[in-house]
Structure formats: C-alpha cells, structure tokens
Image (cartoon, rainbow, N blue to C red; front, side, top):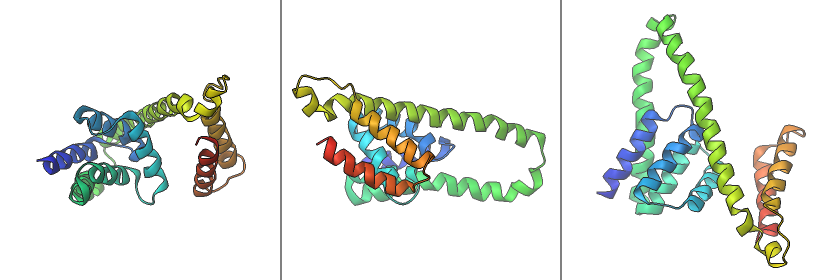
Length: 189
C-alpha cells in the first residue's frame, strides 16, 4: 500500500510541478508533511543532498524520500512516479508543438506559466531559508553555551561567502558546496 501511495504522491508532483526541482520543493514538502514521512529538518537535509548529488533535483528528492520510507522498492516507485508524467506529457507535446507553436493561446499559456514557475522557486527559497535560519541556534550551540548569541551567524556567513564565491569569483558550484560542507563540519559540529 505504501508503494502505491509513494507512486501516486510523486506522480502528482511530477504532473503539476512546473519549473524543475526547486519549483517542486513546496509540493514535495507539503506531501511528505501531510503523510508525516519526515520533519522540516529532515526535509532540509533532503534538499541539501538533492543539490549535491548528480542528476535532477526532483528525481533525487523522490528517490531519497522513497528509499528513506520504503527502501529500494520505495526509491524505484517514487522515482518512476516523478518521471513518468514528464515523459508522457513530452510525448503528447511533441506531436502537437509544430502545429500549434504560433498559436496565441499557446503563447498565452506559456506566458502564464512562467511567472508561476518563478513564484514557486521563490517559495522554495523562502522555505529553505526558514529551515536554515531556524537551525542556526541549534547549529551554533557551542557559541550559545558560552552565553553569546550570534543569531544564526554561521549559516548567514556561509550563505554570504557562497554568494560571493559563485557570483563574483565565478567558482564552480560543486567546489563551493564541498568547501562550505567542510566549513559547516568544522564550524557547526
């Protein structure tokens, strides 16, 4: 029964999750929360692991949730569920795209979907920011034990350094993730 639930949950996410992995995060979070599969902190870890591992974020997240809850069969079913809608829709779109490409209605639909995609990515940014900042006092418990509250200083510094390294110095994201992972291990443990 759990395998059927995992498949339908991720099929629905794959069907309605426009904009890629980051845009799907709110849908995935609502689904795992409604079923009680994982906490917000565990979901924050899922987001981080989905970013670091190779492949599409939504597929990585589905595989992680499925494996975490139902082992290898759960991972396979959840991954199939999130991928199948895109495959089916692309096969359908392929047949009609040339015929209706210049249609004002099709262009209007795409014009409506684009802002929704940006908004969903923004919602994902807000969600992940809240979980990171909420974990800040827990992360910096060594600093809190000394009686000085740095109010999430470590995660904020890691964020700022990441933005500078990627934005200004054009450092490769994987290198930044490795460096910030090391920094987090040293500063937050």
